[in-house]
Structure formats: C-alpha cells, structure tokens
Amino acid sequence: MKPIPILFLIYDLEPGGPELRLLDLARRFSADWPIHICVTSRKLTLLPEYLACPCNVSVTVVPIRRAYMDFAGVMRIWRYVRRNDIRIVNSYDIKGLLIGAAIRAMSGNRVVTVHHTVDLLHNFSLLQKWALAVLLKTTSASLCNAHYIRRFIENTYVPAGRIHVIHNGIDSVLFRKDLTSRTHYRTRYDIDDAETLIGTVANFREEKNYPFLFQAFIRVRQQYPKVRLMCVGGGPDFLRLKALAESMGLRDVIFTGYVQDVAGHLSAMDLFVFCSLHEGLPNAILQAMSMPLPIVSSAVGGICELISDGREGLLVAADHMDDFLSAVSDLLEHGQKAQWLAGNARQKILESFSIEIMVERYEQFFRQVVAAARSGLKEPLS
Figure 1 (tube, one colour):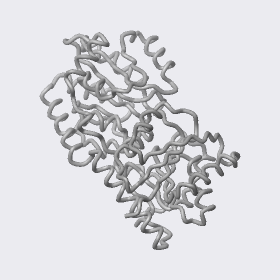
Figure 2 (cartoon, one colour):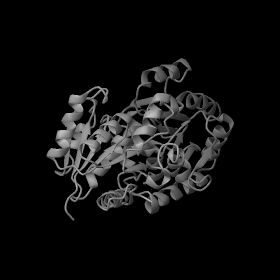
Figure 3 (cartoon, one colour):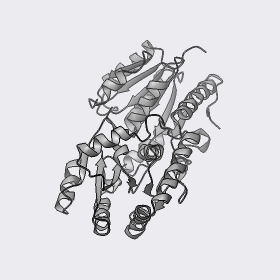
Figure 4 (cartoon, one colour):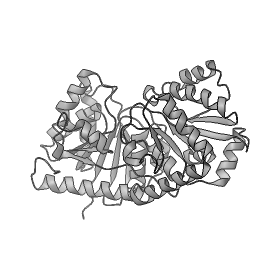
C-alpha cells in the first residue's frame, strides 16, 4: 500500500491523555502511515519524546490562539498539508476542528478530516457546543475512545453512522509491577515497609475531585493509621489543591507533580483510587489495571467499560463518601480479594486493551475512512 500521510492537529504536548495516546501511536504506527504532528501552542513538555520517535514522525509548531482570526497561521498549516501530500487531518479540539474544516474546504474535499472527541464537553460554553455541532457536520468521521462518549455525542453532534469507537490501549510490558522501582520510590518518598500506600494518578482539575479524596483519606487514616497517600500529576489546580490538603492537616501526603516514570510510581502503590466526577476512558485506570493494582473507582463515563464491579475492581457512585470508604476498607481488610481483583484486571488488559490491539484498530480505521473517501461516500462509516 502506498504510504498515506496523516496530520494530527493537537493543542499542546503536555502530559495529558490525548498527548500520551498520540505519543503511543507515533512510536508504533507502521511506515505505511507517516505521522505529521502540528502543535497549535507553545506548550511542549513532551516534545523531546516525540522527537525521539522513528523517522516517519515529524513535528511542527504553529501557535494559533484563535483559528477564526489567525488567517496567516491557518494558511501556514495548509501549505504544510500541500507540501507533504497530507491525506488525513485528525483534530482534538474546536480550534483544530475549525482548522481541519478550512483545510478540507481548500482541498476541494480531497483531504479526509477526522475529529477525536476526548471529553464530555462539561467545560464547554453554549457557544462552544454550538460551534462543535456545526463543525462536526463538516468532518468525514468522528472518533471516540468509549461507547459512553459515543452515546453522548451521537445524533446531537454527529450522525451515529459516522462515529467509530476505539478504546485506549496500554503497554502491558511497561506497566507491570517492578520490585526495584517499588523499593526505589518508597525509599525516595520515605514510605515505611509497614505502611500501605494508597495512590492516584490524575491531573489537578476540578473534575478529578481531589477535595473528596482528601476528605476520604482523613477518615481512612482514622481507622488505618499506617496508610499514606500519593497523588501523581500536575495541572492548573496543583498548587491550590496542595495548599488545601495542607490546610486540612494532610501534611505528609506525597504530591509528585508531573513525573516521567508513572509505572515506577504505580509500583510503589498498594491500592489505586480514582474519584473523578466525569471521565471518558482514563489512561490512569488502564495503567493501574495493567500493573496490576486493586482499584476503587467512581463509576463514571467509560470506566464501566473497563471494570466490572466486583470482577476487576470496585466501583462506587461518584462523590458518595460512605460507599467509597466501604470499598477502600474492604480491600484493605481482605488482601486475598484485592489481589484476585488485580489479577483479573491485568488479564482483561492483555485480552482486550493492549497497546497492540489499539494501534491495529487505528490503522484499520484510517484505511477505512480513506477507502470510503475514495469511493465518494459522504458517510465513510456505518
């Protein structure tokens, strides 16, 4: 097959879900799919890792604040598309969606456009939701990483026949418990062997519900004095929420900020918790399942597609303190049950959510939309 270049329009290269998922694709796509990445801001923390990818990956930076006003920036991207014979443009946000629509129009609809819906729009204004609904009608296809998101956007934003679901996948070789890493990080953070480390991996934003986690941990510690809490992640609310924890008397909580070695930090944990109010299909849950770690999570979004309650972990209603505390206590009290759940979780990753399965499905999807475009279909997916 002749190589088909793809341009991924992404807002930044910070350590978040879409950026890390794109990095997985950049590292593993076959040579049949040369990957071009256009970053529309100057937030480039992960740029060195992208530049270390194979030679079929190229990164360009075109900072654009408002696509509808920055005609010069949009034209610069359009010239890049023509120069590199780009056939597919994949966007992740409204700015990228607008740029993609402009490129498709300028190409005479010869460029296939795909929009990847990565959240539940809970931070969108009414104007942004209206713009999304209008612009999505111009795309060739829409991608979601969970059936929950598909149900959320279909009909209102995109006809059901143009939506395709590809679950996130995880590198089960990288994300598995490593005793050397466990010893290293527990020593580094002064965690005693007799202490049980409860941990989470989530950037500090409102929907991650950190105040709830802090309140819950205070009550857990009243019953189990030899527990510690580790919070892995950064984000816009990091300093504010760290100060909140200290004001609540939680002065020995471990706040790591952004870390390169997420797998190593997970190795140090004994129990993984996740308290989000809203989610798509979080990478953190996949990582914890792969380690494997016993998990207590809120039953929101696509998490219920990963974990069956009582089979791969324990699910509780979001923001329900008594249920959350009961589930945590259950796993702290019953180690054999906790390990059984963790083992089931890793097996599910190996069977259904591996990185290899995800990459294969992405390549199959892109072949499908290109074939549909060539055949002149208006709606490539059915």
